[in-house]
Image (tube, rainbow, N blue to C red; front, side):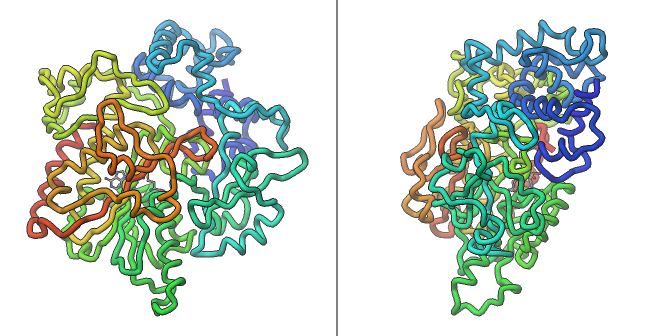
Length: 579
Ligand SMILES: C[S@@+](CC[C@H](N)C(=O)[O-])C[C@H]1O[C@@H](n2cnc3c(N)ncnc32)[C@H](O)[C@@H]1O
């Protein structure tokens, strides 16, 4: 059935074609299926991906149906479980058979996943996923706007950061955006009147950021192609802005940099500083600040280099295709590092439409089911013959402020020693964790390690830690654990208090939340900034917290600590299944 194969190919996007999901579909002249159907299937399945991944993983579908790829499984299970008309293939078609023979198991898992999230009906769950205003008009391609409503696109404006490395906001407003009237709020931006091409709002928290109607496609516009405009959600701009680069800074590290939105934002902020400080004679093309942009994945590092060049940030940025955890903080190459931006891989649960290029640029992939999902965890944990280290101070249990906890009510605070170990190296509680809990556990362990590694850079004075996740485990939980670490205490790291934050972000109202099992001081909670999906603010779900250092404690131990930890960490990371 070409609809499923073609939609899967579009979502995989192996050729890395530029453009929005919609433009990739409509510009594809080889499609046999109707673009309307491909778009509807792709955008709807994408929206449900996180839930469907959990359903498919729990059912073990991919372990037995070798003909199904993760993308095909996602699309077919969407139609089987959610679409009004079911699977759009004849009953005896190989794809229909491959999914339908597991209907009972998939439906049961779907019901479990739904109930665990606190929704008594599919309709309620559906509504929670598409909190968008109803629109009935057709778009320029004749598409019913309700399709976009389901995909959740209308709720969010398109955020564009004007890249001041190459242009100015004034210049762009009078050229590229000349035809768009200015409005005062995102809500007005989203209210597209008949016959009007949309409007534009200048953001009040982040300089050089605008929002426009999301349906206006600028991916082919010369200003976008030449790097004058960068698609970047407002929330994602918080990380570099909160780090607040200064003229007194030495080198900066972006520890997990690809595809490079925050790296180029840092570069733009640095350049503005030099421009504003006329007494400083640093020539624009020979900045004394170096941004070391670290990315461990080779393909993504190549994309990062490309993006850095396109944004005109190359005079500032040195791309390192390496694992940040392998950098020795005491290496003389990093002797001048004063600030680090850490935006590690995360669950991506704060993103609204992962197939949108704006979100692809944020670096989180579509959650896909896995063939190994049902392998007993004890097998995966011991295949490498490594034993797991205990997480000191680990308290966070699953908490997503946007949905009820999947943790069974009987699960209590995870003790720092994790309880009694099972023969497979897992505690009883850990072996009872759902796939989501296991994933969050592994992610937050990895994220805490990255953050504590950042604490080790001897001359570092400021750090920002951010994720596009809504889960407390990956956010406040990581902050609390990292602050409790020996290295944080020895080196004098503390949170950047709200009153110390850059103007604009200091006024941001959404602050940290205490999860069921994460307690923190009010000062720490206030230091955490959150953005919530589905609000009038028009952002994705996001979290950021800044750190500053009081004094330079423990400076004598840097060399040993840097390398010693990297080795031990590797052992733990392999156990956690991250490569
Ligand atoms: C959320 S994305 C970063 C997005 C980026 N900050 C931006 O704004 O465009 C996380 C990136 O970190 C990379 N990464 C994960 N672990 C890493 C590590 N230990 N060292 C370096 N890069 C890592 C991932 O490959 C991924 O590209």
